[in-house]
Image (cartoon, rainbow, N blue to C red; front, side, top):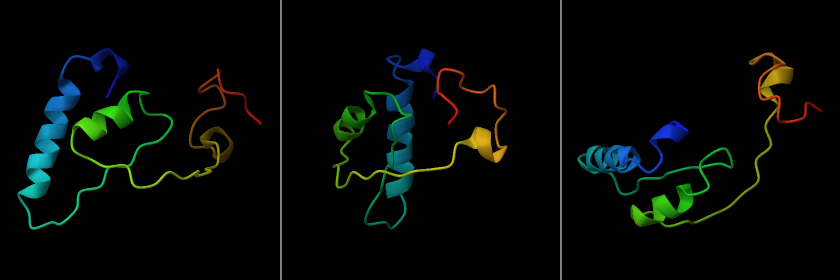
Length: 81
């Protein structure tokens, strides 16, 4: 989702559709994972959508600029170390 869509109701429509589709199948749980790259409002949105936070953890991934997945010029606001 792009920043320009925040607050427009697009996320609510997508979430409602995802929940409807997920529970149309015989499932017991529906998990949502988020990260620090998500909007700061994301966790509150997920809670309002009926999800319950169960765990927080720190995950470390290689910088995609170092692995070659993205060019070194990507995300210039984040130091390349």
